[in-house]
Image (cartoon, rainbow, N blue to C red; front, side, top):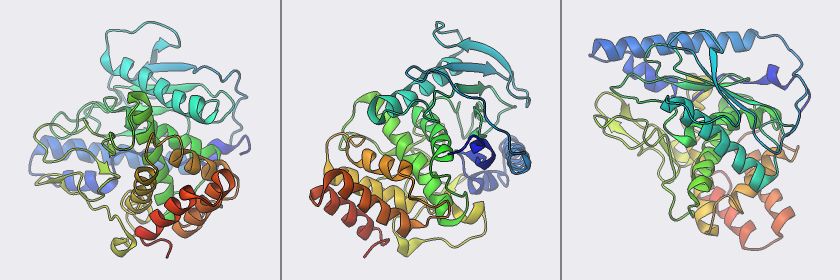
Length: 350
């Protein structure tokens, strides 16, 4: 991707708009106010991202080790905040600062140690993050330049640095930004979200050295408070089952094309229909067994970075590309059969 990759970046949040919309109508005034503030901030950042001029990124240096800087917004809405921890410096007393630092490192480790990628741009781009953003801010996001974490409202959501897969998810939006550049709308947008869920889950699995069988396949486990009837924001194993709560609503993700949701909201349902390619990856990974980052993850990474995906690629185009990537790396064996079968089971190929 060219040096103006930043201009093609989406404003990507971990909590979907439909969840915040639901909370914005809650009976509890504090929950309602927190959700409405989050929606307003997300709208502002999204508009700023769309209006941002094309600016060439500075050349990166290094790349074999992460270059992390964590800033503290001190509950303001000004970015980047004050830098409080730099690369190689010891842990500080503030837990979210350390969690963000470690999560950036875990994401860097997966992409570098497994796939040979030198940071998210493959050229050593520094990894920057801001914690304690806003007041009770119910989200975390990638804005094309840095990770930003809210502290949550304490009633539905906890601190957003608490889940390493959330950090991996958001930084993978950066990888997609610098590679396939998938447009953030419709099926290409759902693929963009799915790739972030896939590699976010792989970041956690790699950090814990879990096999596909041992992994929980959840995105955002630990983000929901004990009062919520749910386990996470999304499930790759069983899309649509992550939560079912009186206040939060029910997880709307489909697992197959039979449940595909046609909507104008959320850029065409990018956080909802991503459940379909998510489930396809889970099926492939568990069919192949072992560590999911080794074969299934390698196939998805090859597809993302192979240069053959168009920005407006739909599910079928991506599925076909994964089959081609599998054959290129592993030939016509069980790997190719597992990939084709996974996409067939979710109704994308058949």
